[in-house]
Length: 200
Image (cartoon, rainbow, N blue to C red; front, side, top):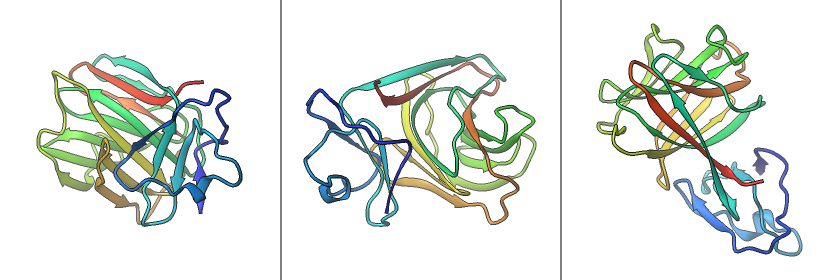
């Protein structure tokens, strides 16, 4: 089954689209071409375990966000059930992708933290215990942007480095609520984030 992050649209300009692989095999043509070939500018997510999501785009755009210490930003529209985020971050430590019920700190449900205690962890709040931890030394850089992808699907998380398979996977055994917003949060040093997406 193929799910779309939003409605698929075909590019009018017959440009040569690029497949940016997010850690797996390209989706077969038959999965998204019903009749004539078309150029897709949206994200495709495959539920086939043998296929990992692929981002087809004719042109990639970036939205950049500079966060001062202890700042949160929810720049994306509300989602339902699932999303995938293609992002880069430059940070000294504790770069967080946060999921919230209402786009505020009060509604915080999850923090996916990169660069904490030499690894990557997920927790419910800053003071909460780690729900899952994977050793990943050097995952962040203060000198350069590092690119990752994150997929959330009804309580299941998968995180990987750009064009690599997921190194972090976890499913919440007892979800407290359904998140509706996701964004970025910084810790005690400034951070620069970029979200990569198809141009419109």
